[in-house]
Length: 204
Length: 320
Image 1 (cartoon, rainbow over the protein chains, first blue to last red):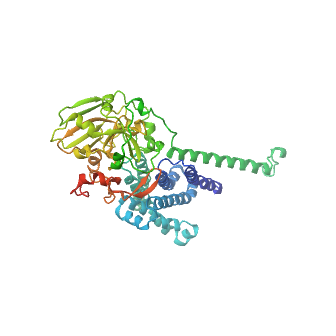
Image 2 (tube, rainbow over the protein chains, first blue to last red):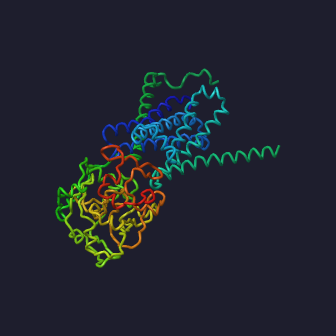
Image 3 (cartoon, chains in turn blue, cyan):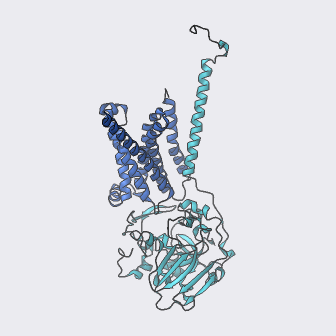
């Protein structure tokens, strides 16, 4: 893809679609009997979907050879953070009634809140360093190492989602499976890269 | 040499730039619209809108007409002066894992659930154990109107228990939901040990606020709310209100209950509403009231005056 600008624009518009429908549903009272819970739930699910999509770029690129896919990774990651932030804000407003102390107590006392908070906090340095300027300033190597934090983000988010229900439902299992597959792909890749390197050095 | 050869396409057939750009922007608008529609469709699959209302047969069609509480009964907690949860919400936001773990999907999943014929067996430590046909069960006492924020129609469980004459060593009452994976499809999943079982201590079971409900808002209980007959214990968490009951058993020992067996650290036998005892994974200090908003949770769900004496001297932190 020579000019990804239009494709990025399409992604930008589509990334805003869930928020737009959510706002529309909220305005028309279409969020069901427990609207605040519904909004908190769906924004969390959106964050999780965007985290998965962000992590899916590299495997998809390697498998298909479509290197242009990497143009979309930054925006997908930013959408993940955006929905996670809306998710946290709604929880803060409607479940903790804007009580910062309530949120801190929850984070301390409840492992599932702790993992959610961890996922969100770990995304902050990634967002801050997401600009081209920052990549240049940090150097690609350091930047890449920092952005491996996204693996911890995904794992924390998966645990957060897994622990949140009374029972583990299909959604939790699907996301945990997706994260496991996406991280598993990388582990296998690193291992085979490691053996290739080892073989190369042994042969030399 | 090929270079310098005139173009084979006559100049009249070359799309002019304006039209080319026009066509391109048309195509792009199409791509944007189609992708937005696809994303919207996926979003709707993940988060569907609530369905339309579903009516059910009036309670009067099958049971004795509902009686209104007297002033004295109202004062004893039979009626609360609070905004009532809407019928739509009550029938479309249900915890009934036999049908679905998604509260908003239960109504749909339970819509074809047939509750006639139905029998409730009452057995165990009593003088007159028997199996009640549904119609006989409802003849025990007229359905009374109870407003526990929702309007339930039913009668005190004590009236049924007195009918079978409990023995003096009957200290607990065990309840069991129907086990029939063909009719309750989620029972094929392993999420809980089926059938669902619950229990009360005899004094809790005999308390006048504890009812067997067969209707809501003057209508027959719809399947998603526990048809044809369910338990309502207004000072306890919702999972104590076992639905679609087929068996009531009087026992000397405390019976196992589904949630405390599934997660003993999280759910106890008593499960009385208590803002100062948190569930290990979430706080119980505040509650989200459907259609109203969040407020501080009340001790015994606001029924402290009526039921606190049942637990006098008990450590409610240990007996959560």
